[in-house]
Length: 291
Ligand code: LIP
Image (cartoon, rainbow, N blue to C red; front, side):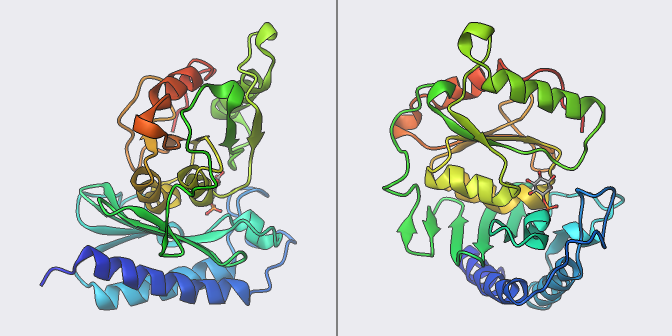
């Protein structure tokens, strides 16, 4: 029989807590062992151990579903339309290695490439975000998102917005130039042709950035270069909390799960100001992101 979405949600929550235990008891080191392509792109034994635990458990319980995970990704087997678990065992590995408390396990489930179930757990703060498509998003399974204490008023422009952007791990080439020139434009005063955003954060976890936009503590998040496993779970949480996901590249209202360029905006009453904020942001993007 076909497993129900609540069954999948609850199983992902239990895996998130098990993963959280491994992450909390870990003793990572910052010395540079486990570099992937450079000193900003890390993988630890814990990323591999957590992914292995998660994929083994998922294959046992849901043998018919595909698995797409960061540490076992094979470019020859891209994401398909089949029901697929899309998993990042530790999103924010740099933070994890430095014990900066903004890392999480990100467990998504996509059907027809549509993010359908999302579970994101930060063991440092014991914060669980989760959502099922069409059934709302919640903090710690009880409190509906967006949070009452978060910003739920209409969006009125980048000058009133707290936004997240990320450096990513590519530190050269055209994409890097595009990001840095965009960051400069976003921050600069209006008299000098900038957007004068209220402020920008680069906290180092795509999944937690999406959850912060979902709960209303951030207004917007833009990134190019991250992967489906970084965003699948957070995407469901975001949209179930009333937020919208557009493409990181100007003009694209229909982002792809594996498109590697994303622009998330928080919920607002009747979506008030959401599309305008996306368009204002796009007008400041300084070039093409090529992923
Ligand atoms: C990281 C992201 C981060 C992004 C990095 C990287 P990891 O995920 O969440 O926001 O800037 O490029 O993809 O590698 O820690 O799982």
